[in-house]
Length: 271
Image 1 (spheres, rainbow, N blue to C red):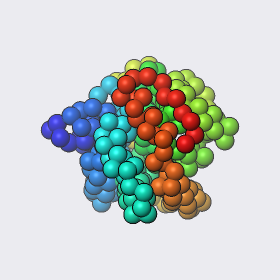
Image 2 (tube, one colour):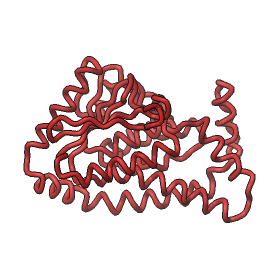
Image 3 (cartoon, rainbow, N blue to C red):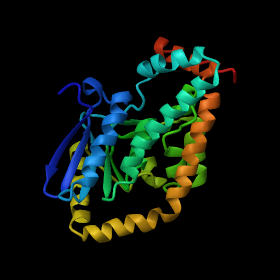
């Protein structure tokens, strides 16, 4: 159905979640985050599912946040100067973070099959998975700096355990695009495959190999590996939500949104 943000298909013990987005468009809106949390909560409770693959339902993994919809969400908050507006924004950010947490905290292995564009929130979602594989046409971008936002859905926290600090800072501070070959070089993805079809097949095969092991042991491995990372990530997410609730609603954000709608480079002033 066109109003569904996800598709779910099952092959034995492996469930494949397709990111359809609103009307099939690979973007994230409010309904996307609500459905993401519900989908992964259900998968976590389903004992027949032992591993999960995330894949773009179309050619691309995700363009990230639906900026057109976000502009409408931020506009009334931008006009409000009282503390209640800041609290409302922080609650929104924490709600979206919680949706991504259902992926990261799933007690079953997760594999992201990244094809085409993986931008902003798409990177947040991919790094919430245990393992990432990509097609040769994949392009990654921690794009938020280019649109006046401190990335607040987990990439700044979870990439710490995935790529080196220097690579993380370069990606986050520039917002540059990174192709699949560079992503593999810096450890952002484990494997690169020639085509999207081969990538999805490889992701499913990898998930099946994981699912063949004891589900109790798989859960234990994830729990042990997250002993250190979990509290660190949560502290970072909470602090980022506080930071953005204080500073996100800026002239630079207005300029970024206007520039996006007018399809031109933004001119930031730091205000």
